[in-house]
Image (cartoon, rainbow, N blue to C red; front, side):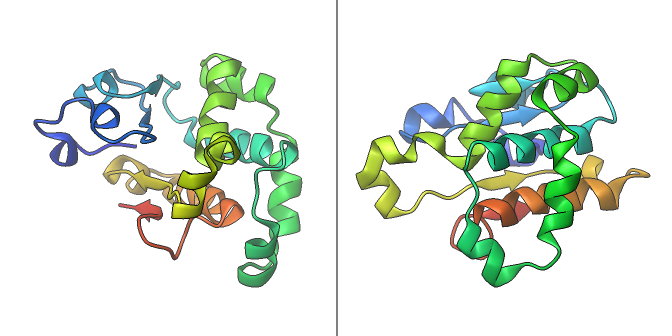
Length: 167
């Protein structure tokens, strides 16, 4: 998600910080989309499907933090069951994005390649989601925020420096 004030005057931040990847999910091609490493031009109103689809990939590709889930969440089995319905193929259809881009976004969110960079992994990668009022100020704002927070909870990317959803 994006907010223009955070990116004003930015150049490709990932070029300045190796390992940083920027994913922008927005129906519009904005200035932020121009600096993204992955742009997901999803259909309007499909944020929840996107987040559930990413969670589906994370769960079935083993990219969740089971210890964190066990220690810090309740009711996660119900979330997992809900995500089961959101297969990559179905979410790609709903969101009008390529299935491969959905899977790539989920893998980057879950840091699938962190095992290949063990020195960086031990230093502690963090996943931060920046978003603005579009997520909050919609009729589905609660569902959108809950789905995004579930991604962070599933991967243990909340409650640690540099990680979590940030409105």
